Length: 115
Image 1 (cartoon, rainbow, N blue to C red):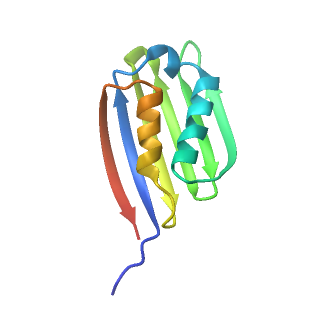
Image 2 (image 1 turned 60 degrees about the vertical axis):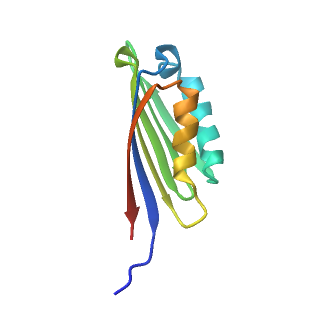
């Protein structure tokens, strides 16, 4: 039985990133929206939280599914989850934007095809 491709799921571990940008909620939201556009996706909603003393969690609800990021400025790290449905989305492009935006020098990514 042949399975129909439903979506693509990317997990990214970003390290050695810009600490200041990883703690800037406004910058993070703008970067996620930029990543969404690069992925050819449509933003439906955004929810973010700034932690004290540092760190941000932000989730973009997409027409195609979601993009989320959890930042740990104290470790110069962020963890990204990008899941897109359909054949027109380009989640790898979204990850590339985030790597560039946060000036990351090390990335480990995993890709899963959902069917």
